[in-house]
Image (cartoon, rainbow, N blue to C red; front, side):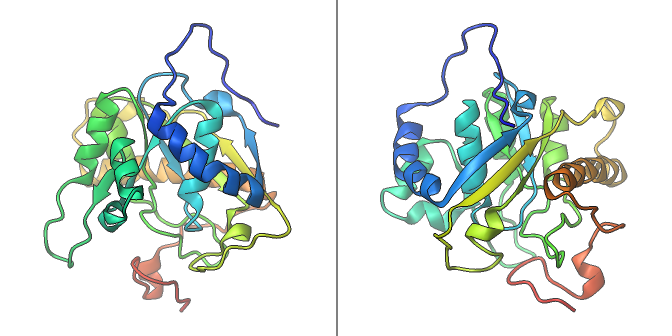
Length: 256
């Protein structure tokens, strides 16, 4: 059941002209491809900064989450591949809407600090989307794999809510690693927003790797629980770690 957050006071709309142009370009196609059922959308803050952390299992996930956020009235900012920003028109729209370009460089070289940009977005009172898995899950049945520290670190450093969210159904539109979108029949995508992760026990503590790993696993557990509700299934015990299967977290999935 869809639940849109109620606002007791009038909040300035984040749907600026640029976002309305993006919606004009994207929403008709996404609506043709699928209908969207939002669950517990009241957990999305009506105003102020927060980090939104979704599961990641299809390359169309960011668009699906963008549609959901449009429906609840919050405009998301993403960290996207810098190459996308070089596409005429689209690159201009991405820049004007505050999306963050991230350069991909050979391993071992510095690529800047994309999380610094995420914190700057948070400082402006906006919503920033950080995928804790960092890439499409390698888990064979599309359950969340191990998480990285970016989402938790951003929330703790900025002192803002960390909202877990799970979606399911996008894989029927665009399967993992596929480049072919399925148009018919029309799909249904479910998005469930969780309550903010309680990070109070970590407040004021040094952000060392042990603490970040603990908090990140707490986040991944919450996302997995939301996905279990959507799928009506129980996730495998133990967090999937690509390294244990000789897999890289870059490139296409290969089960071993």
